[in-house]
Image 1: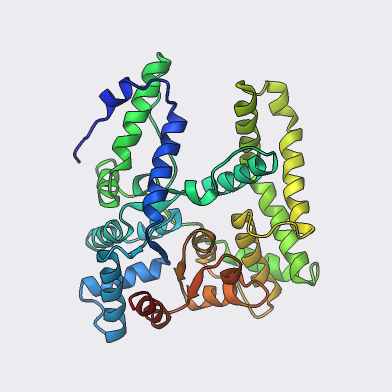
Image 2: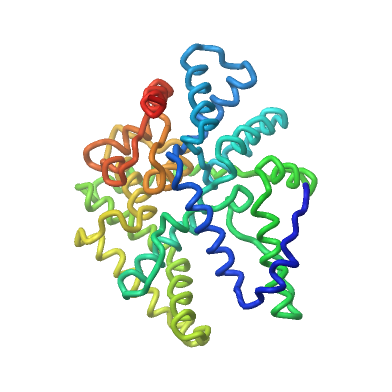
Length: 371
């Protein structure tokens, strides 16, 4: 892993904060992304590419899919970003050879680009809405939702507790170094430091199914079911709403909130209730996509008596919340495609994202792009 330190460069700009430096790099990256059509691949579509590359799949349709993806990438027409859900699922591969090949393909086709992690997207969407409604100048979420593969799980940085200026300098230089690291290098470092961790979500599908059928009569319409799911989700993510409120408070006052203000929690509780009521009153359209998409997909499964939660649904719903609002195309499995595009949700239309549920549909979309 080569080191290209920007330490000396940052010495001459101590007035630039770490936060502003990170934002500048993200804005620079979003400008790069804007020149491409963005295609988000569900994990199985990445694995299909790997299987073709290794000769494990030889059928004409899979080969055509592989060739088109590589052609559109080489011609700088399409970019294939990943998300934290992709990263976690890819790491489930136990064979080092197949894992390395998948990571190499992702490095090449994503051009090093990822969406920020799920929790960070929720925080960004909340901050953007609050800033926008209070009349503050802010960047659109599409400008700040992109990051590099090394930061797919969120930002980390070394901390020096002795000198603030030195800490600022170290963090900006460290960020620049990590910004250029590939997924393959990241996985290699993980192996050297104890191996690739267990990244699987606990399978809670049976628990969800038990809850679904035991409470089947409580919500008789999609709207009721959606609001029930939304209330639960907002409650889980109240700490992120609190962080957003603190961020705004710090920006406006230049001070951290007092312990009393933190303990009271009145501001973020009121904001959480506001978000819920805005959805209830149909005042939300494309804002808060992570809340809408995740809650809506859960509600659709719960409302359909013939549907059961499946083991991978938690990852799949997060794939959808990453792809639909921020990418032009989403290639996924048939069941999720059906959930997204059914009339009750129509999230593909709401967010202007073309969704395909099999390789054949993906190939047709790629061929249209290539015309």
